[in-house]
Length: 178
Image (cartoon, rainbow, N blue to C red; front, side, top):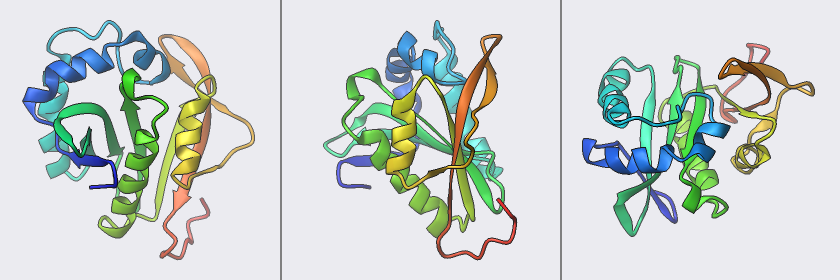
């Protein structure tokens, strides 16, 4: 729990609201893996994977909700590609909740959890260069850009430039040369 948010596991009952929020073309446009159109059944199938990836210790995926309305999902945040020392931060927030600081607040909480509970040494993330708001989320969460030259990812068959960010666990000695 944070000042304004509750991060909790997704429930199948969240699927319709996830479809509504994630189905907005503006979300798919600035994320790497959210499809558009967001067909019926996609949210249910995605939510059904969460328990198994947690049990396999591959990822943690949380619904972002406001503290006063914990049944209403406003976005998602995750640590994926989880290893014993690092993970990738991923997130999306519904368009009606953009610009309110919710994503930065959730990112700070998940980063803290990754370092304090999972004992990660490094958390990394990237954003499409044409989505500077996502870069601001990373910066507000304490992440630092790790490359002066953006790399690219393939999104819908098109190469898109991205910027990479990371944060290192301040309690760990880093000998891996990240």
